[in-house]
Image (cartoon, rainbow, N blue to C red; front, side, top):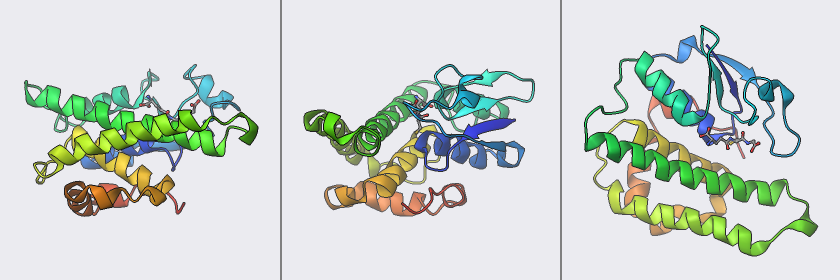
Length: 203
Ligand SMILES: N[C@@H](CCC(=O)N[C@@H](CS)C(=O)NCC(=O)O)C(=O)O
């Protein structure tokens, strides 16, 4: 299978960590792509009209997006170890993924606001609103992190990728200061081979 990817994307990283944890990473071929909300990469658009990464082409040609669908596909292929089948664990893990994805969405939009939008068009309240989503998301994560123990599933993988993206693009937020349980958990989780192998490039 092939994945349209960017090393900087936390959503791509979520899929790649998932693949690593399932022993599937060797089966994935990387297609470098330049996903951009304005200068849209037509090579991605040809497969996924949204033009976003990650986009996965399965071996039978099926095109899969977005990252949630790709992770579910990989989990099915790899034996279903990362998304529990039964309630309540299933819903807990899927909501955790939603929270982590929401932190990533807000952080990516904040990044675009700072790095893509022309300075004259920037709106500081809008940026503050995105960063407040990140902050509220981190507060929710902090309430649960002490209970994660050594869990490895789509919920914890997604949180790991969200925190890794904050370190990559928003180190100045200093999120660890007010979130000690999350920081302690991430210090362990971030050393997993799957996380080390998929680290974003130096900011
Ligand atoms: N909901 C999507 C979000 C993916 C996403 O936002 N990817 C960014 C890169 S981190 C992208 O492709 N941006 C290009 C664009 O917004 O057009 C997913 O879970 O895969």
